[in-house]
Every structure is written in C-alpha cells, then in structure tokens.
Image (cartoon, rainbow, N blue to C red; front, side, top):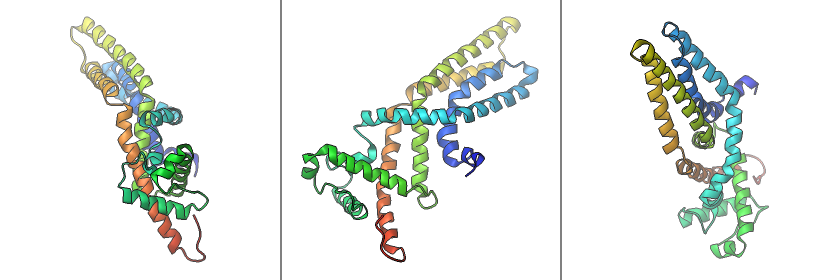
Length: 256
C-alpha cells in the first residue's frame, strides 16, 4: 500500500483526518472572516484548503494522542472493554453467551487456559485478565480484513473517531476560543468602520460558539464509552466466525 492510498484509506479519513479537521474548523472560519469581502471566494478556498492541508499534516499526531490517552479511558471505565466483556465478574453479556465465547476461545487458543468459572477467575484475577487481554489481541489481529468483517471495521472507525476527538478536546477548545476572539474583533472593527458587521464574520462567530459548546458539553469519556463497548462486543462475536472458518478450511485442521 503506497503512501497516497494510506492517506485516503477509510479509517485514516474518518477516524484520524475528520477529527483534526473539526479541531481546525474554527481557525478556518476565523481566517475567512478576515478576508476582504471582494475576496470571499478566495478566502473560502484558502480556508478550506489550508484546513485540509493542516488536517492531513496533523492527522497522525491526533492518532498518537488518542492512543496515548486511551489507557486513561480504560482506567475510567474499569478496564479494557474486550477484557471486561470476557470477565465473569464484569461482563454484561448473557451467561450462556459468555460461556460459549470462552469455549470457542479455549478451542482456538489452546496455548492459553481460560478460567472455567467465576470462582476460578477470582482465585487469580490478574492472571485471568492477562489471558482475556491476550484473547482480545488475538481477535483484533485475526479480524483486520475489512472485507470479511465490514461491520466490525465500521464500528472500529466510529470508536477511533470519538476517541481521537476526545483526546484533542483541550486543543480544540483552545483553538475555538482564540478563533472566536479573532472573529469577535473582526465584527467589532467592521461595526466601527461601517456601522454594521458583515455577515461572514457574524455567522463565523456564531458557528464557532456552537462548536465550542459542542466540544465542552458533548465530547467526553461517556460519549466514547458506548461505541468502545459496542466494538468489543462485535469483536467477541467474530470468534465464532473464526472457528467456523478454521473448521471448514480444506486440508489438515489448523488451530488459529
């Protein structure tokens, strides 16, 4: 896969680039507001083009920040979602469903010994969690083919989008505040000069204010959590598919 294909990959665009563009959107609106009226089309092109270029440039930074802060989310939630869903003491799955996942994972991961009951798990919770985490890593590795697991891929994109947005919240709020101030100054100077403010700076100011409220109120760990656990649940559902494919594959039976 060449560099250009990687940039325009669905995950990169929607989970990495899109969050960064939302972070930089107030700056683009502020830039458009300061262009003279006769250059509004040039301003729009420059604002959109500049935002897109910076978004591509900083998309990887947003991803790295999201991964770095991910452990903080796990701590707030009580652990990694896939590990929690496999745990007898923490899972909200139906007990029969959880038992079926354990049995499948024990068959396809013969190198591991999964706890057979809640009592066995409680006897050594640290070791049990390591086993569950290893199972989660195994499932993520075996389900990377987005053509075979399209729903899982889509959910992973949604999770990456929300996680990266939350990770960049402080920077986004700072950019929005500075951009809002710049638009406010532009509205004020235009009002002083002509007695009325131009519509572009006024609309930009309102949009930035709405974005600032959205960032402050909506973007939070509780907004990321549902999609994180939805992804984990779909990841566990995939273990049945993996076992079925192993059983139905031609030739000698292979342990995944």
